[in-house]
Image 1 (tube, one colour):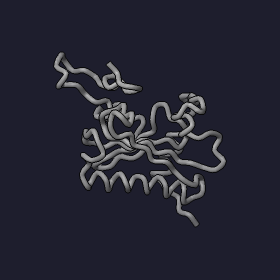
Image 2 (tube, rainbow, N blue to C red):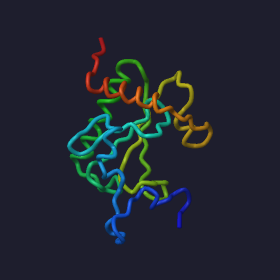
Image 3 (cartoon, rainbow, N blue to C red):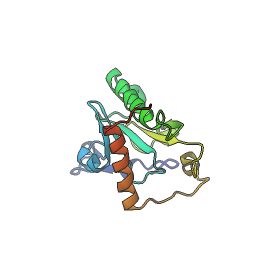
Image 4 (spheres, helix red, strand yellow):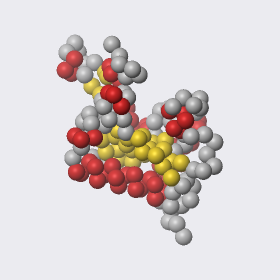
Length: 167
């Protein structure tokens, strides 16, 4: 049974017949390799399979924890450092001028994946549509072609791996 928009088991894979052996798709890192932007000791940054915009990224902890209060200091610091790295590259260089960082923490907050993660949205005044309007159904979701997805992830990876310096 679901509560609101929450479908708790839709992202779980069952292993055997024992529900205690269920596996989180965010914990199966090999599935995330194609999406990987940045990998750290405690967290990783990915480009989602269905991004809401070019600048939609996700930050996921390596350790499976459900809620933000379960994070340890090292995880919090590495998440902060990843946010700084991506924002410095894209915002400090003038390509974007802001970002949104979203975390749905708990079932009543519409957390659909029981593994702590953050949605990061680069923002610009001249953007065609707001990813927040897509989330609130004020704007239809724009489906990205596989070719555009591959081009975008290559662009983002390139900027993060070879950061430019603002002059």
